Image 1: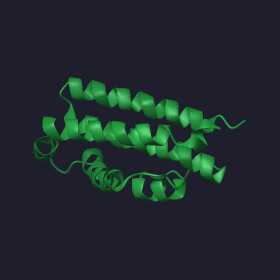
Image 2: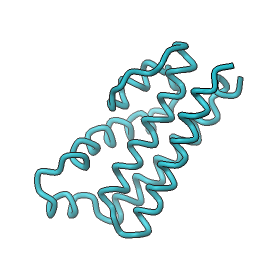
Image 3: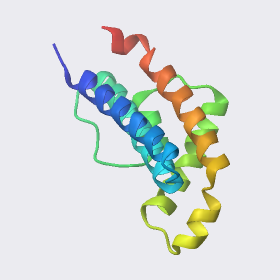
Image 4: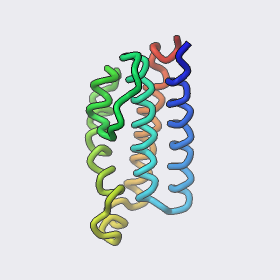
Length: 130
């Protein structure tokens, strides 16, 4: 039995909890960053199940979603595109002040809610239940 997808999902949930902790601490840039990482790991669980191989060491959620054949709604796929771009800014901010303004409390909360929705959808994929 391949336990790797389960491990990816455990890590995804851990990162989602960290995103919530960062939100509660007022660390909104890191909230967004951890949301991205949580989705990335959940998608990698699906990639592993779909391909039977280790997922590639990439951070691009759009590519991972396609490799995983993740059954996401249109709005979830649109969110992936949004957070995929945001992850670059949060990972390598050009200017901290601008990033803090861009990723404020309201944006971080929106990303957190949408991330939870995506993770729930992925976790309920029947391929992960086998």
